[in-house]
Length: 169
Image 1 (cartoon, rainbow, N blue to C red):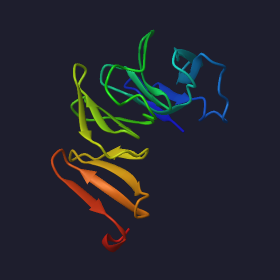
Image 2 (cartoon, helix red, strand yellow):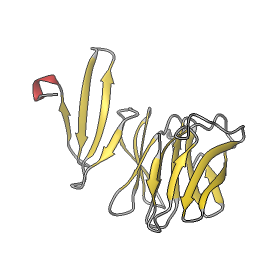
Image 3 (spheres, rainbow, N blue to C red):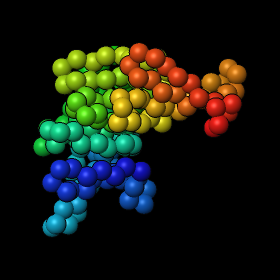
Image 4 (cartoon, helix red, strand yellow):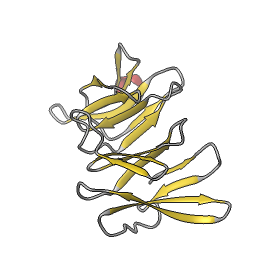
């Protein structure tokens, strides 16, 4: 489910990606491949079930891991579980890093950004599918169960554009 490559050409993946094998608690299985082979990175998961979702690497070579129980930051050998920030702790499975090294987390509680010093809530729309484009757009999939409609949403920081079936989806 998760696969990313850092600037030193090391490949990272998670336990789910390796045949559904999930290591026993309290560990989250993250694996790194380099020229010498595979290494298991034991990332402490002190808050509950630690099934990982998306893994990204920022410009500082820090791993950002979205999980069902929150966000995990892994820098070298230091792990931070459930980063401090309001309403981000549930289902933060989608993580992305933009060209300014701002981390974006999309969860069931909405869209958050983190610039290494401050959290900012950008949208209250929750989803588990998220992507960044090269023009600064934040794209997400959204299912509105009140009217049973599905939307693709693009948020540019100020304006929300919804795409639905009449738009060609």
